[in-house]
Image (cartoon, rainbow, N blue to C red; front, side, top):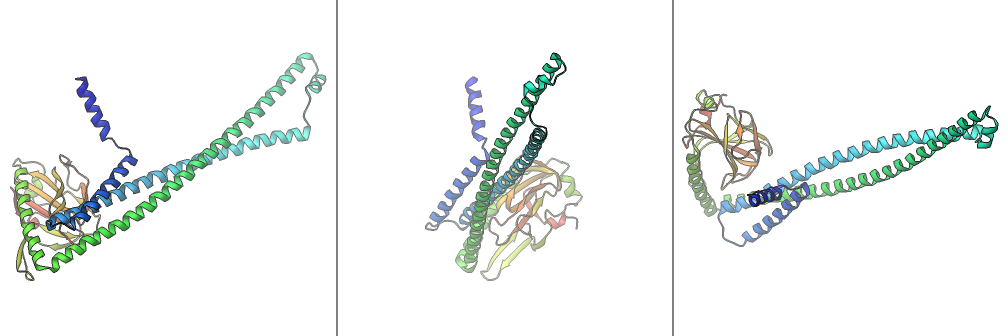
Amino acid sequence: MAICFLLLMTLISAEVKSPEERLQILRAQLKEQKEKIAELKFEKTDILKNIQELDKEISLNTELINVLKRKKEITNEEKKNIELLMNEIHYRLQEKREILGNRIKEIYIHGPLHPIEVILLSYSFSDALKRVKFLTIIADQDKRVLDEIERLEERLQLQNERIERKAEILDEILYEVKDQEIALAKTKKEKNEYLNEIEGESKKAVAMSKEMEKAMEDLEKLIKSLSKQEITPGSRYFAEKILKLPVDGMVSGYFGKKREEKYGTETINRGIDIEVPWGTNVEAVAPGKVVYSDNFLGYGKLILIQHGDGFITLYSHLASASVENGTEVEAGDFIGQVGQTGSVKKPSLHFEIRKNGKAVNPFNYIKL
């Protein structure tokens, strides 16, 4: 029992990563991914798999940029706190110096009294003792003020060194963010060039079309296995046809068959495509439970939400997902951000509604 508990604690502690460790892991993963893509250029691999590997690099790059930006925010906040502390120390230092300055001024004006003078000017022996004690107290107070000034100056120096280090860290973060943003733009460009190359060659375009058909079949099987028939609060949204679009944007692809005259191929759009800027927030269209949140070949980063009565909604080509398997969501909840993952050439959201595994026209359930 003790061994099992110890093993569990070891596994838990192994999962907990500091922000710096997380950065190191992301950098290492990104390096490995770049090497993998470089190797794939010399191998014969499936088109969709190549696209998926490019998407992984884009995703890792985006995550690294976001982690760096969060670190920048934290460092900036720490820098502000140090500056506030420095201002407080500086104020107290000025206060103590002023006290000591006034004391020195008094001594200069009235002159320091020797203990013998104090005794001779006293009216009685008792009065003389009181005066000597008073002088001792003043001397002790002066010493305490001097000691405190010294301590405050040391603290001010220490905080100054800390703020200089934070400024250096910020410069390093900003440089790396800029570097990663350039790398991200380059990878996005490479992906678009690859998609343009496929579109420009009939053999590759037909091959990709067949790969997408296979990916759709695999997705169909997955959705059927996840469909549940019980009536839930989410299923009411479909019965009453009161859904809202998951994003506000221009619909660029409609439900149904589409023929590509250039290559004589026919594709079926099982949902709708909405063009919106990269990073646009995506909302759940009805209450439900997330049953899939991961990459899927051809669809990029994909989320499936089960709403009951056989209804499942699909959100794909995401840049990021903010929900995991098992997450309960309400209508309008933020679930992810629009991206360009999978087989799309522009940032857009592909949205589907499935009833008992079968694709249905989303506009039959959306309240316009």
